[in-house]
Image (tube, rainbow, N blue to C red; front, side, top):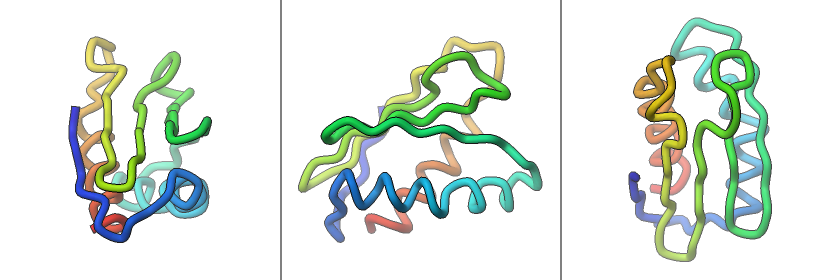
Length: 97
């Protein structure tokens, strides 16, 4: 689990919109890829899925007034999610920091 200080602060809805609009382009440019990314949002929780490479929910982002918490739900998968996680952390730091 990774915790990021929510300095801006971003609401869950604002972060969800940023992820939908900007994260795919951000990570695809970093990885020189064309990943499909799906998102789910309920209250202060955002789920991030990479259906082409992982089954189920890859990451869960929980947003509060003071912090953004990132949980890697795919740590035990065959696919190495560390690179995806690091780019997601960098994106969150850029937007919330």
